[in-house]
Image (cartoon, rainbow, N blue to C red; front, side):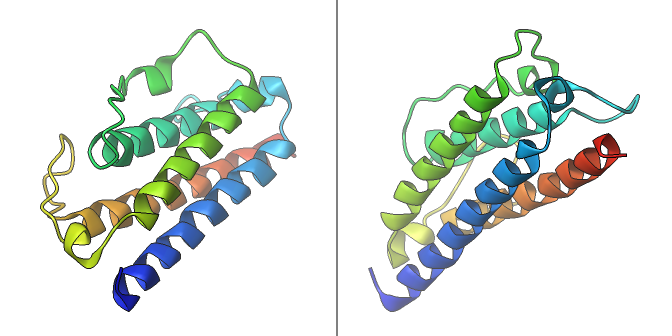
Length: 154
């Protein structure tokens, strides 16, 4: 790895690990019931957002870069009726963030610029772009989680 690819990987690793810590911290204040509750007629539960982020990272990074074989069922991330426990869902998020970190640490200057293709991200051209897209997506949903936690703390 060159200094540049190390710097890029370190920056993304910091983001993904920080985002996972934020989700864990926010979830600590939620009961099991509130973790899955949808307080508004629109939107998702905190739990569904965690499932969605986990599926997103497993698919875009795990499947398409890490060759994990993960098959995404995106709609189930929002409609899952067999609700797992909060701790299990959060462990799954931590596991996929660990996978993202391992994948990032293996990147080189050449691999970060390799062409990237996957369904749903037609405007992403290379691996650097998908890491960036996934980090922005993760951060976006943390904003929604903050809003949900504030709603339940009223």
